[in-house]
Image (tube, rainbow, N blue to C red; front, side):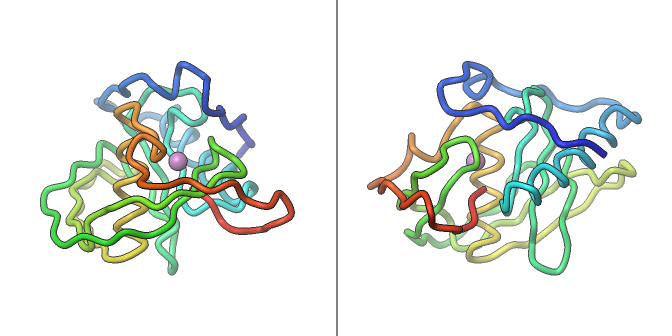
Length: 159
Ligand code: CO
């Protein structure tokens, strides 16, 4: 595994739409492993492939008990609404309040190509929505109701 460089806001790649993954080959598996390592090293809770410069529909999300490796995610149900804070590894030193669904149901492929459905609530639902937005070139600051500069010594976790 290897650390990859996290692209920062202003890099045009973050604004492009990522392509579906049609074949889960070694390249994709290495990408997912590297994304997990890069996310952990940066103290994040989620990371999307375009954030490491790869325009493919792959994300990793720390759901607490494990880190999910997610390919071609689609939100198939969403309900409720919560406004809460979120951050992004591509936008350091900023936090913002964003309205997201309270619950989402996501369909995706795991790294073995098996179709999975995952139901997420609260902060995990927020993480899924945030990471899937990255695959469509959307940053949370596009949707934020308010943003706040963070103290650089603060160790809060970001996505
Ligand atoms: Co992000």
